[in-house]
Length: 385
Figure (tube, rainbow, N blue to C red):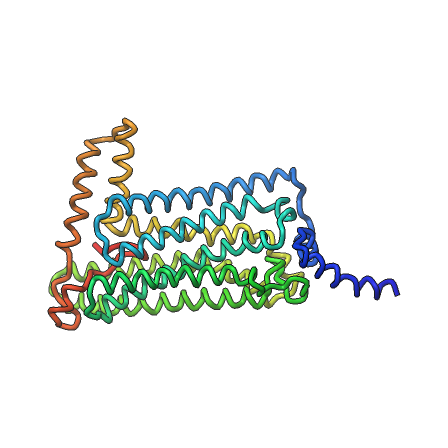
């Protein structure tokens, strides 16, 4: 009689906590998922060291992308569509670092002092930032495909307006994806449908996110594969060796992008799939590695600026020129005249845009050839040089 009564009262108490937005609801879900088993206290030294390491990772992502973003805005004169894609990807990666930093600082014992809406915002902001980053990568790949493989004659204003529209769509979709649990797609008081890794998230929602990100990766692979085929075919027809070198460089860059994406995101996809289709007991074995796997996914936002900074001379010149000017303002001087080098880098970057455009169109149309651009060297670079 008492046991039956307690079972009947449990759902009511959970719904009452949810209606009041009480933080005890989070404790209830974490306890049901097993996340409280073996959890250290507030003074756990290992937890403090681990959290400090994750804070360092998030700060690295933030500072790195902030440096590249400021350098691009201040030092690059080219305002073609690639410029806006580059700024968009850097901004989304910067937001990823900020969201991960907030997630780490609000974790641990602070988790159980959060209201359910605050918990959903903490996790949703990170999902939104990661989604914005991947959507931006897909959008950039699509624009490259449209520019190089399916060129269409259009005015600069039309092209810029379309780019603005797609960038806005990327952020709208990312925001919607991250806020879906807060808007109602969650498992509050439905314990049988809850994730073990994210106790208030529905397994159906997590599966939906995994499918979306997997489709994005497949689409990026297909688009860059088509771009590489066109560039390689054009390079084989061209008698000049530079065309072949550009095709090989593009292949290397595409492989770097895809390998970085798979290495950083693959473990997280695997962990989420194990959480969805595995039992709770089996999922508990992998809970300890969740923080490391999430940090690895966030590191993709630190790898992206490294790829397009070192694979694009124009972006590299912009970053180095910005750093040189900063050093000179602080009274620091390295070997050689840094100011002269920065000025030369800036002038070369501005003249490269007009001197390194392809002379021949893939379709033999003279009107379209002036709208073509050389293959982009990385996920966010301006061209392959």
